[in-house]
Length: 392
Image 1: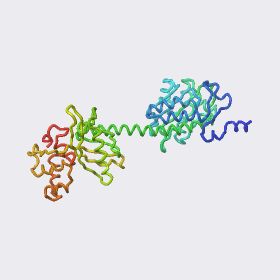
Image 2 (image 1 turned 120 degrees about the vertical axis):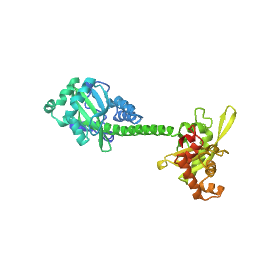
Image 3 (image 1 turned 90 degrees about the vertical axis):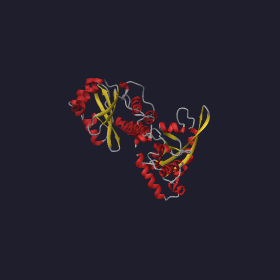
Image 4 (image 1 turned 180 degrees about the horizontal axis):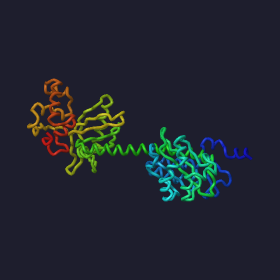
């Protein structure tokens, strides 16, 4: 009899997936619900639900909607814990009443021997693995479980890296069958894939938060800034950049600017920082107008993207409005700088040395209270500011 049972329930498919394709007769009949389908089918349905989740909320919902296909229970819990205190940061449950959950947090968690075992071994466990029936009836945890009529429990660790960050909890009521070794095999697979899916969505959530913080910071600097991928596709542009390059709601200059940006980024293959001039055509009520600007770009960390600062090109201005702040020579340097010229080109045009150009730039940085050429040009042109003199 034992040999026949092994042949029926230990097929090669079961050994590959870790999921039994069938259950001993009567094991789940008292729990109700449809019989289990093929082990591969139900595992696939579960995997799709958890791995296609794009947020923690989706993962919790996907898990609770499919885990009952793999483990029969009267109640299910998915706990995300603080690793040091072992207290829940959030809880997702199905079939558990609020009164039971509150009682467990008030008194049950502190005396839960399965939880202690789980943190110590990082292995799934049910009450029959730790206690005989007589020993189990003496456990304080059972009294707390009886608040909702539960008498059997199983838990599995959710492990990310080397740390237990959560638990998967299952409960059955009085008169229900005990959890078995087959359930342990199933829940080990369930916990592994749930942990992988949780690790991914937590990472994506953190990335979204960091991106939102970065975008908020870039909106406050008052300098036109564009972040793009390595091919020049725009990922983010702050308000000042949208206004200068026509990237706002009407997108009147969007394609023209994107083309200029793609051509400009090619130079970053051989330079740490690239500076070029560009002219962006923008459609308006009076036809197409052009805006000249300076693009100054640098790689983000690990060349995962490009940050570009936009500065208005001088277009013939002489910055005379800064005569009370900058010397004549400094204004000449600034005028050439606004045309996209590098230090050597400015030096040749003014017939001075490169070191003299650098000296003038340092003095202008101090006077205009800026730390970069792009910021200097933006402040000199009054981008995002009422008057440059107000900041001196």
